[in-house]
Image 1 (cartoon, helix red, strand yellow):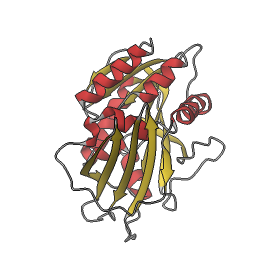
Image 2 (cartoon, one colour):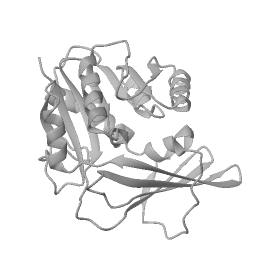
Image 3 (tube, one colour):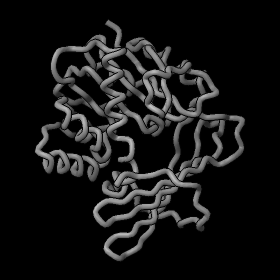
Length: 276
């Protein structure tokens, strides 16, 4: 069963723990699996509309591939996939998941700002769930974009999704999700503090309440994200001439509804095309 968005939880906060939720691939996968087929449809459609389409399957790269859900989905559609992640538990989970489905794919350990992976050049790269915001400096963000560009063929596209910040906002952004699979139920609450314009960071907190084989346990993690409003995103993109900004969409994944890169939108999906 896929995860479902739920109203904000009113339960008491879970004390933060030293264990990071990203080291628990199964729970992470259950929460984020909801839109996997929709995201894969969007990625295929984005290549058809904005990329340089070649005959046959696509060669697809996923920076920060996490639990491998999109690697598996795209490989099952006949595409040749490769990904990398910083967390060893995610790399191993992704490899096992591909193997369990009888699918081919390359998954390696690597950092977003200085990775190297074979199997290229790629037709498509994608990173959709704000993972880009883990790069806390402008230097790191630009280095990542340049590394992706180096792995794409001319005319290839990078589909990059992340939330924009409203520096005038004073409220905590709060979402709650519920997912179940194979007797494991996960309630997830993700909250973001108001963005600080002086440091360009926001504090993010995830809380997981897990029911598994009759046992209940909880896990809370806190970290910082780098923040961008539309102007800051545009400035960053201008500093990476390897890419042109082809189009913008939002997290509804509707190729029929293009957007502008401006501040009224809380989230944005950038279609970046590698220049010849």
